[in-house]
Image (cartoon, rainbow, N blue to C red; front, side):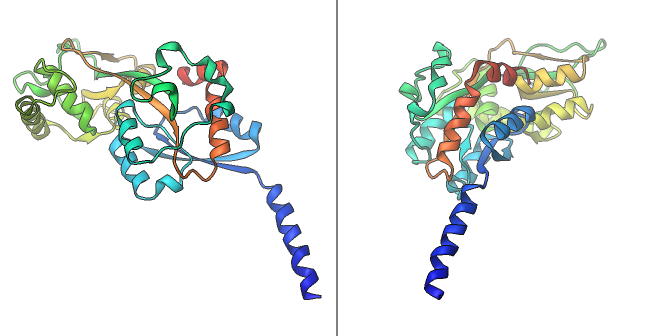
Length: 286
């Protein structure tokens, strides 16, 4: 009797598992996806999407290295981190046959220099790094990175972005140096500017946090990404965003399946879903 019950129990458990909805674990920047899109994906593919968020790329990488590579299915790394994650063997190759909507990817985002042939990543969203600030008739803002790095022309209380690459890059551009400089003297100059600005700022925040400080009027200016600035200007017409006259950078975030993703098939379905033209438009308008 005992021998008969075991196969029956196994069949019951197998059938129960077949009826369970799928799961997808998404690791993404905060405020970076429309909840309505998530609900539509869950409905269409009978699954549950669990979202965990981060505010800076360094935190994302540390958490993935600390065990997240087998916990999360998808992450959204910026362009400059993709080569690092490939070297660390943190990404799984994309099976293009499961992502037919790759044909919808704009030519300028296909075959990027950091991932030839889109073997591991697909473009998610792009934008710029700039300054988000509050208008003032009494004290106009000069469109320069000097708002943060020149102590003689402070805009008022300001927030620095909690991102090494973006903050050091802004300091390098202010001094007229290349964004990707490896020159020790130039990097030391940028470091000194950042340290001086640190003593005068009201704190470090991720892009979302910086935007919220300006909206909450606890800071007049912050270094943010263009997406947060666009949302902030919608919430408060007395705020604005600009690229400093010294120049800045264009960033490109990417969808990537992690090397030990527990739900790889569903992750690739999600990428294909995002590449649908109507869904992509909804994402960009969020």
